[in-house]
Image 1 (spheres, rainbow, N blue to C red):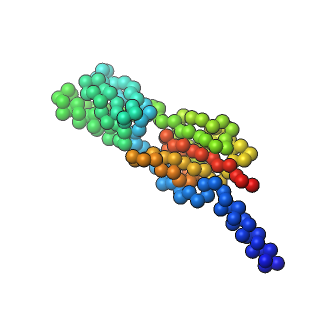
Image 2: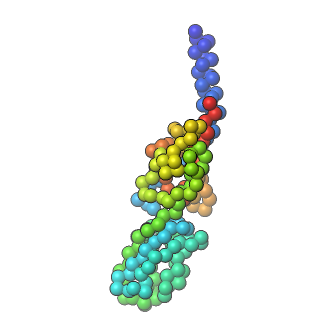
Image 3: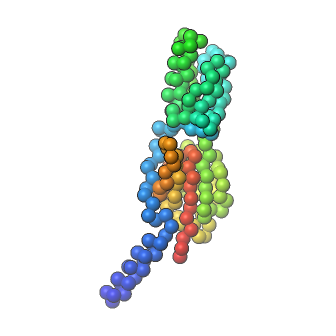
Length: 185
């Protein structure tokens, strides 16, 4: 009886070790309150009383936006609050406005990408608060072969992308690539 139990335990351990992505480390939890702008984000900049400095701008592939009278401004890796402060400071420094009131809001986030064992892999619009499970739901749900307990995420937070494991309730960040693995058994 003990031999059968040990055999069953070792077979289960071996089967779970063969699961793709099982050995990935957990990825650092995404905190949406610390959202940093990145290439592909679309922002609305409102400069009170200055229509020529108000508009919608897209962060380019270099992480910059082009603003009339100011030229290009670095926006990547800044929060919206940091960007509005930077624009205000630049308007003051160039003596274009004495006391500018600038507000920046995100109107379009970078998309998320879903690969693997989902009904419709592809690119989808990001919505704040998305989890792995809601991202899979947007992609049509799991296929019958999909692993439901975890997935892989590739996230770019600095100069290079990082891959890690997420659970169904893990929050997804804009620009993440979610890969749902195929189960072996």
